[in-house]
Amino acid sequence: MKNLQDAKQKYEEIEIPEELNLIVKRSIKKAKRKQNKPFKQWGIGFVAAATLFITSVNVSPALAHSLASVPVVGSIVQVVTVQEIKIAEDNFSADITTPNVTGLENKELLQMLNDKYISENKALYESFQKKMEEMKVAGGGNYAVNADYEVVTDTDSLLVVANRNLEIMASGSESATYDNIDKEQELYITLPSLFKDDSYIQIISAYIKEEMQRQMANEEVVYFLEEDEDGFSSILSDQQFYITADNKLTISFDEYEVAPGYMGMVTFEIPTEVIRDILISDYYIK
Amino acid sequence: MTNKEKFQLVENYIVEHQNDYYRLAFSYVKNKENALDIIQDSIYKALNSIDRLEEERYIKTWFYRIVVNTAIDFIRKHGRMQAMDDDILHSLLPEQHNLEKDYDLYEAIDHLNEPYKTIIVLRFFEDLKIDEIAEIQSENSNTIKTRLYAALRKLRINMEEKVEL
Image (cartoon, rainbow over all chains, first blue to last red):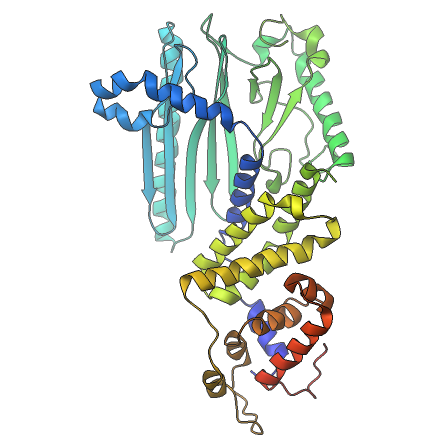
């Protein structure tokens, strides 16, 4: 190696690890969360949870671990962690946290939710193990899954639990499902149940398209729109959504669903004026 | 530019140029895990001190400076200082007038002291301009030029070999 050109070539041959992209994205996300917001709220939740649950800790030591991560306690209906699975091998890792809703009188709803959480995470864990074994046989690779939950909304009348999944191979992909629960009437709220008829699909889609265009014109963001192949044309009738504490409807898209990966998951809050005429009532959405 | 716009801009910039910065970090620590740590740290630092980025056109040098400083800090803290004294440099380099084919310039650059190593890497591997390196190192351009010549002398780069400064 005689000259700088050769040395440069050697420099350029430094191998880029598969996980770089993921680490970059994660770091950005972390920094963003720190910058933005709502951790004040969480802090109070932790303290409240800690005092309220002292008795249960004494009663059941097995519960003690899960209580460390009780997110928000505002009323009798609560969400606690019942199980956390962690696996860490060389290039494989899984961190799966299963939530459990308690305090609803409606046992059917309660069981439906909790069974769903358990079965989803069981399926996730099994598919992780299967894939891990396959990859080991095939000579390795990197694979990680991360499932976690967050209480997105918790008011006197509403509880929204988001279940987030992060699956990482060459690059990561993040997705979420939301359970919107009416705590007073103990009902599970679906997107169609909010509206008089199916016209919400078209009306919300049109609004989101407009909003995407507006954002792309004004900000450094990119969405996949209709013109692109596989661009966004319409929400699903059961698109993931959640209701915020101030009673706004927010539509959520998984990573890659409507935007390039670096945008992560994206959400759109739908102004209530846009959908007022087609709402069944202003009970949930105001 | 609002902070939010800046954030988005920096985010996009980092994502787009991640490979370059990874190589730069790797060139200091020579292993994947530490290089990834440096990248991660640099991203936190950048995004948490976004106020200090004044104009869009400084993104590049601003982020280079963060990565370079993070890498050098890392080496200091972890005691894996690459730089060696001239004896070792001599053992890697050929005798003055005896340009053997197999001496390892790449390796030799590794053993340069700071700031010489960084200047060589930024100038010749990352293709930055002298002015940009001056900004990254908070020095004036003439100082950087002088150091670059000194570094090349240390490496015994044949100046007749087309080295463009």
